[in-house]
Image 1 (cartoon, rainbow, N blue to C red):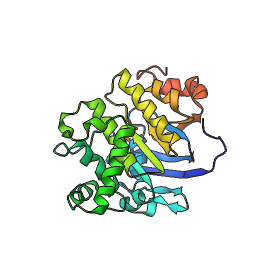
Image 2 (spheres, rainbow, N blue to C red):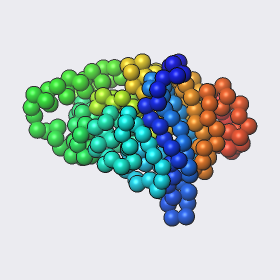
Image 3 (tube, rainbow, N blue to C red):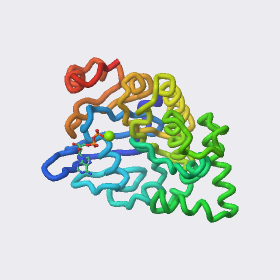
Image 4 (cartoon, protein in one colour):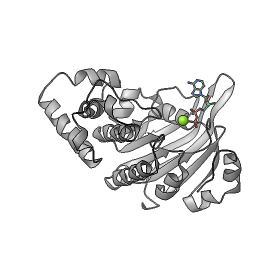
Length: 261
Ligand SMILES: Nc1ncnc2c1ncn2[C@@H]1O[C@H](COP(=O)(O)OP(=O)(O)O)[C@@H](O)[C@H]1O
Ligand SMILES: [Mg+2]
């Protein structure tokens, strides 16, 4: 467990976003303290991915603020958010199938300060001393995820469990200080989910703060320091796993979805 009184690395205040008439995120406030694994959970459509899109300026917020290490994230373009040390993994797999595993992870370094993943992917082919350094860092990230043996394989050959881990390695290769993870265990079997949990904990031990959106409740309950529950775009509850697991409102929100254990 991280120190409960560490300072806030990310402070989100009164964040709101509507799509047409739909209030996808409504007046949501929370903080993520340095060194935490904080989970953001809620039924499908609760607004979790939208919050990540707002924090990374993929979508403009209607209202609110997100203070990160002295910067207002909501006013920054996406590449600047990445350059500040905020990494992200996506709900749907985003590997370049034609590239090798190593090249996919190298894209992570190029994201630092560059506009988008496609530009970053193209830059990999401009070989340089810088590229050699990226290659080493990418190999380190793959090694930490136990994937070094797969470095030269085309990403298209990997099963989902390994694709998910490569995506995490790619995000870590950009050396983030805060990592936003959107359902990293989606599509994984129980054993792969446990492995993902170990990688997330190892990531935090390496000094990275984690904001985790995840549907797998056993994973969330076992590795999170604190959980924020959203329902219909609104904040429903917040607290440590023991408290959230027994919260009547949370159980009601999840009725028909799955058990919280
Ligand atoms: N770009 C978008 N345009 C219109 N509606 C969207 C968009 N993104 C999300 N939504 C809607 O906002 C709500 C919250 O979606 P989302 O944040 O993806 O939920 P979650 O990730 O918690 O499942 C859903 O009703 C979804 O359909
Ligand atoms: Mg989502």
